[in-house]
Figure 1 (cartoon, helix red, strand yellow):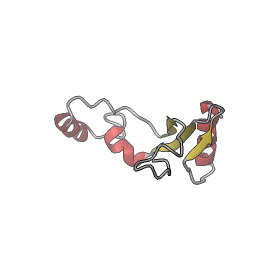
Figure 2 (cartoon, one colour):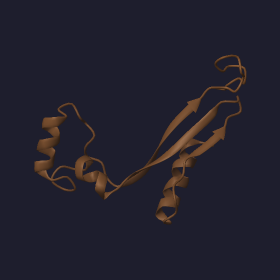
Figure 3 (tube, one colour):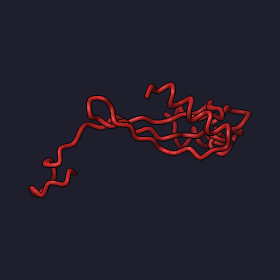
Figure 4 (cartoon, one colour):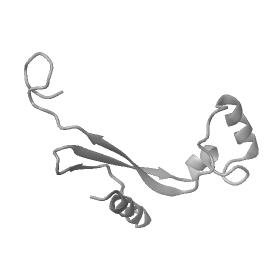
Length: 102
């Protein structure tokens, strides 16, 4: 499934008030793609929003002091996702010769 389709599906589900769930798909080459939704809401924006709007100036000062290299600010409410592609696994690849994968 194309990544834009997954983001569209998560966005539509969130707008309809539905539950966002992780998704795993098997790719043509046997690898697995894992997608997990990430929602940025008003609670997140207290520390990661726009300074002077969702994030108060005194919060920004404290965060800057505690995390001087942090650049995770300026966000807005949104739905996104994280994505991992996992290699194929052989059933003989386990520990101790017992077969069983990981």
